[in-house]
Image (cartoon, rainbow, N blue to C red; front, top):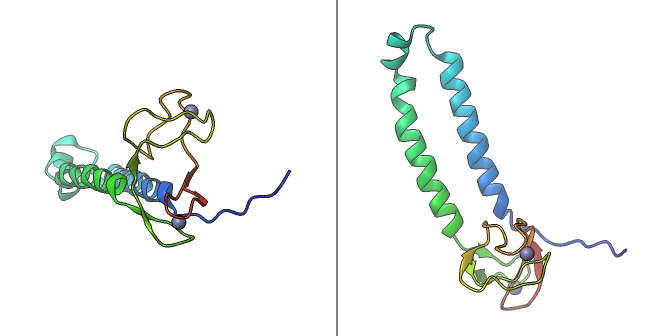
Length: 123
Ligand SMILES: [Zn+2]
Ligand SMILES: [Zn+2]
């Protein structure tokens, strides 16, 4: 089998980073919180939970919309398009985000290709 050395655009990394940050923040809130709920609910950490998750939610929406740059030719590649699944080779039938799972086989895409240079790269 031929070893593929595709370049990566770290598309999934954005979301992993966001998830890790959210978990770290929650752990921080839980571990630093007071045992008494009355005190905990008036603490600054507790008050930050709401705004933090609003911020995380907005980041998620921006991240998935934010275009990726082809690592081969540096052209911007749309993250929402009618992409073809790398596993079942079926087209999605409508414009969908690259972070979404395939409508046919429910596989998360690990690669995408550039419309400009037709090169495949890792997400
Ligand atoms: Zn598929
Ligand atoms: Zn390209």
